[in-house]
Image (cartoon, rainbow, N blue to C red; front, side, top):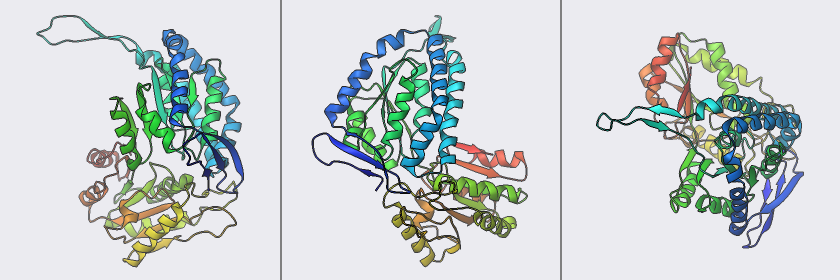
Length: 424
């Protein structure tokens, strides 16, 4: 079990454990609603002084945070890898990518937040300006799969705009969240406050009148609870939810490159990525060639408990049983297992061999629901129009990808996809 929490009405303890080994990584408080309100109050006390600083001063402070972040990157990557079970290379990539975001934000915040003149309606012949001010206290509810990278897509910008932040890390990665805050506050300003805990702490943060804006990354089912809580105070909310991303490959595309990309995108971080390629949709002319190329690339992927392996364990308890049941159901209904599909036998941890399926029935859960595991389904499309229809046939449309014969065709396909973003 990656975490152990108290179910009592009083303050308890959360123990983080390493999914690879079962070793305890650390423990922290499983906060009550009153505990969370105290954390929010501490963040509120720091808002006025921080918001009063000119944007240039805040940007320079972000560069100090970046220097501290780089200095302690090995430490943070080690804790991240221990709590999530991902490889140290994957964790290092996540942590170092944050430094690029901090750098970009620090040099572009002034431009993004500067005052600007805007035109008005002809019937209102007045001069108008847009001036930006902070919300106050921004709540960030972070997921366990990228416990450093995902909240740090939001936190630098919240700080640049003059806000303070209350971070609620996943109970599966609390130690990473606490260390993240320690690094940021170690740059000289106490700007991040952490509310640790499970569902009680998350609900308290979402429904608190002390939160001025809320960011949530996670599942659609949890998002509904967050929205209900935020609605009590009409708190503005930004959300990034699940994906069932499709990679479309058309006749004339570079099949070797498409196969390498599909395998990397499907199995990175054991498939526990909201933008993971869970579906590959291919037109008839290159279908067989692509399936064979993906099978060959998948065979190169190393899975297991060694920290240097490409694919580590599934972090969330019970995920392996759920995903294998979906795979077995699909195969029973006629799907073909090209690779993987079984649990790797290890002393500890839930490992799934990188799995590739073809001929998957349209109704199969493994094809329609987010698996969050190293599973790829390859679908045969009649033509490009059918490929687009298949891509758009699911409700989870975070992102997608296109490999085509040329840029004109790829862009034409991308414009017709119902996704938040498309990579060509």
